[in-house]
Amino acid sequence: MEILIMGSKGLLGAELARLGGRDGHKIFAFDKDGLDITDEAAIEEFFKTHSPKVVINCAVVSPKACEENPGRAYQVNVEGVKNLLKHKSSALLIQFSSPAVFDGNLPLQNIQYSDSPEVGYKENDQVNAISVYGKTKAEMEKLLNGTDNLILRTSWVYSKTKPFGLADAPPFPLNEIGRPTYTEDIWKCINVLWLEKLTGLFHVCGPEVMSRHEQAMRLFGNVEPYSLPKDNIRPLSIGKIYPYLVKNSVSLTKWG
Image (cartoon, rainbow, N blue to C red; front, side, top):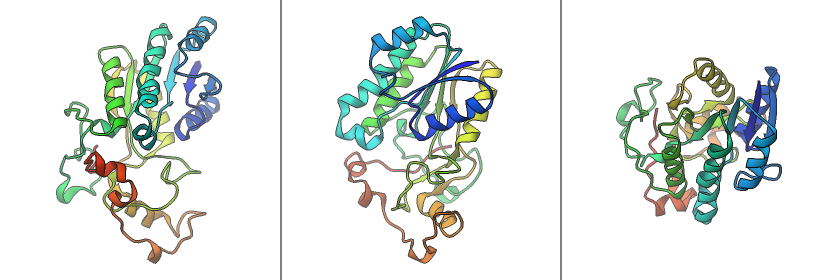
């Protein structure tokens, strides 16, 4: 099967391209230099000459970059998706979203480190984005709601070579809580969804809820090359690490 993957130099895009190729699919993989999602003419031209059955969009402006340049954030995270949706013809669009569409105020209380799927946000919970990143993701979801496509909200994506995902370097805050999600599990889920011809909105994330600090405590000293002694890992508030989150009053108790 022919699959177009946008954002192929990012962690998730690169992994999905690798896994799709491993499983025998013909992969068209592009980053912004190869096929810019914001260039509608280029997107239109691609679909005039190619007919992929599936389009997986991993192209995104990161949360920090969104705060620094909201215009660019909207251009990529919203307008770029419009371009794919307009020109993809009958292809299935698989679009990734984020827990940032929620305000983070759902209390996890004493069960916050549970592996129960009942802990955290559900697909039909009220969206209330606070950050620029979250608002662009929420706007993107509106574009796809009611269409025969897939929205996958996922969190803390990691791979074998990047066990911390994009949070690959310290610090690791005590009050940033989420569900680490393995790239190969996301790929397996995608396969189930398209084989079953399912569409709509799904939460796709790992089974365990933990803080970044707990994640570091598990991995350091146990996973190469993370050999830092655990005694050197100290709790730290996320507000001291990412001041833009304080500006937006984001509480990072996450979702299921």
